[in-house]
Amino acid sequence: MDRRSGRSSRAHTGSDRWWLVLLAIPLVFLCWLSLSIVGLGIAPHVPLRLTSLVVDVQGALVVASFALSLLAPFVVHHDRRHVAARTAWTPSVLYYLVVVPLVNVLVATLYLWRRHRQLGRP
Image 1 (cartoon, rainbow, N blue to C red):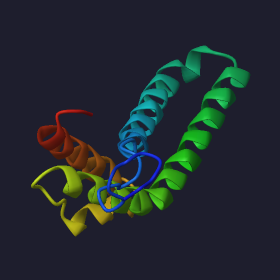
Image 2: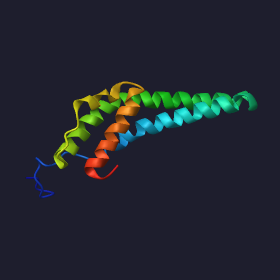
Image 3: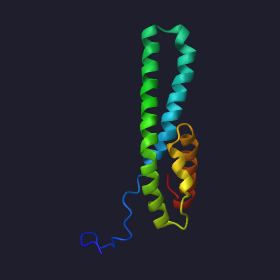
Image 4: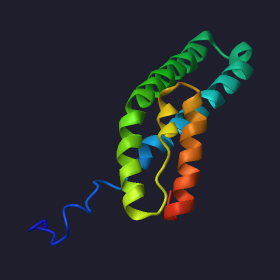
């Protein structure tokens, strides 16, 4: 029993916001894809300086996506524990495939959808 909160320490599984990191994976991908499409469309019509800025932002998004991929297994581990403690659903270990680039977009989206169906949020 935790003296400060009065709750059982066994029931505590940490933050319920781990899913935010997983949400960032498809969002970063969509930003990168949007910039790619816009960049290809405007490249012939704008100065080189603006085109290089778009390419730099795309590079930053790729680095962010790679960092999220490396962080994702840790996040999935903690969020799986959180979800399993609050629902009858225990997410599959296959969700650890979220570490694989590009596959992680589909896996994270599927995980968040299933999580939403079980918990009713995100």
